[in-house]
Image (cartoon, rainbow, N blue to C red; front, side, top):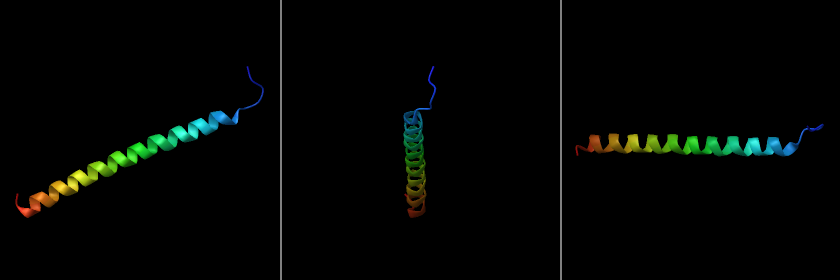
Amino acid sequence: MREALDQWDFVIAAYAICIVATLLLAGWSWQAMVRAEKRREEARGK
């Protein structure tokens, strides 16, 4: 058992949260781009 808190636990948790949030944002943006391209093609009459 440790007496003091180790700051590396918080650093690792912060990096993990940032990585997950970045991946979620990239996926959301990609889906929005695909939907916009689909609407554009439908508006062009293809």
